[in-house]
Image 1 (cartoon, protein in one colour):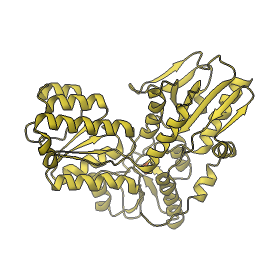
Image 2: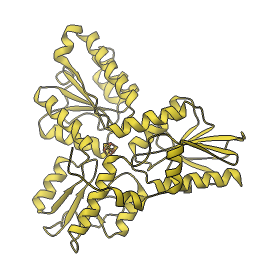
Image 3: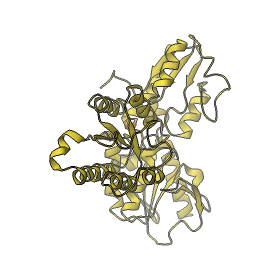
Image 4: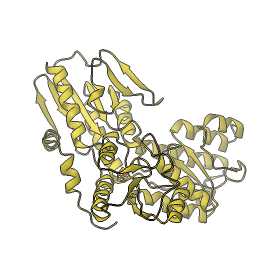
Length: 382
Ligand code: SF4
């Protein structure tokens, strides 16, 4: 898929003996607590690759200013580590004023694993910087598919999140080729889109029910809803992506007929392998109905959010937390739909013995997961 890389240094620097042991065993009892760990969790191939490329670039371009456009991946600790290594940020909370506009040939700019918009890439090229492009090959898959859709006259329906870097990059690519898109976040939003297609809702009602920025500029609701091609942001909930594809297929059959599907509808699964594997493994653990299920990862991390939703769907008390600091007298967690950061008391179930399952997003280092598990064990067994 791409040139060989050596992830061992990256893995070594984020190694946790506890997580390694639990990965091997699948479950282990510590006093009153049994810990369950899915077969697949944590750093994915694409993150290993991106972080390895950054370290290779640090060795290759010693002495030259090195920058990230924003986060390399959605994990605050990993980004903080890179800042400590002297890598600057061009955008976001830690950016340096004017750095983006004043880039020059001596600068090295790292494009993150979730890629960058066409406009940003053009800016970097126009400034003559050295570009280290860590875009994950799995992210290129939906890019290629959408280019095909545009060429064949389809509007792209993206199951994704407005504002997520990967989806922003896909949208900019579609626009640069003269195409159109609509972004749907959930099956509920796909229902609204289907209602419009089936003549049950007006364009105004549809716009009102989707998030701001869901439609491409100049979207024509008569013209651009005729032929639809579906793709997914690589890190969405796979079962929901399949349901969205099926719902839109049905809407087009209801509007036209079965025979017209061949010319009016495409659906291509672009969920990445790591996301699928982590979700499948998380399901297998959540199906054991643990008393508590904690998913560790950056609050901006799409695949982490969806690992928590896997637990909710199976009726398990599931919480998306960012790290060990979230486990105090109160539990700090991200609400699965509103995205609000909330706190709750009495979060440790009183049941003894207690079974606690863990998972971790594709951008979560083992060290962070290990610290969370240790903190949990301390709180329950003390
Ligand atoms: S989650 Fe998937 S798409 Fe994202 S970096 Fe990892 S392998 Fe690539």
